[in-house]
Image (cartoon, rainbow, N blue to C red; front, top):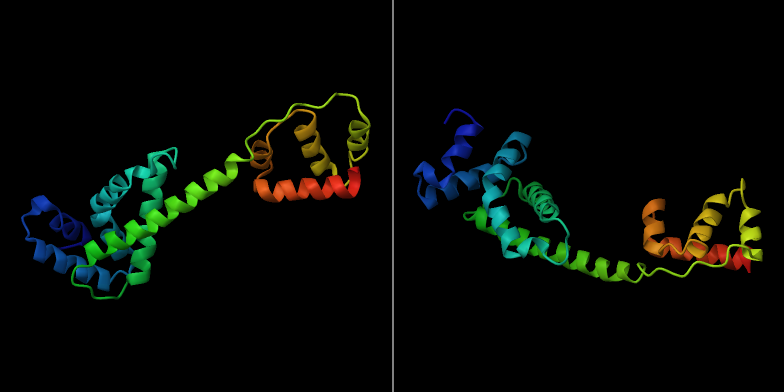
Length: 191
């Protein structure tokens, strides 16, 4: 073999090498995976297995909207594993890596599922308040001050009836921290 392209080609099933020969090549690649090019070659050889792991976990169906997000995360997790395991000599490292990847990907999907349940409570829309009120005048008084941003968000929540999740997304903040900030602002400045 002349270069890493030849190594990657040699690891394909149609290349005619036995499973033991392919396992030896992958073991040698893992030992040298500290080199970025070897790391990339090893990751490239594992792509069919990584896709298979994603398929086993149904690409996060019902948890992740886009299956490519699951695949992208799986590739990133596999790359992290290769960094963690670089320099080790494992006889059957490809199945070991894919098994460890399955565990990490499953934990990631469980975290995503828990986050999805948490965010669901912030999706409810409230009925908009009346357009003329003492609260509106109070919020308007914060225009141009250091509290203008939170006053604007409060206005959108109260008078436009926008969901907390939508506002948090627009504000690039977490719904729970935005909710706490809104509560603090209301208690300190509006009540």
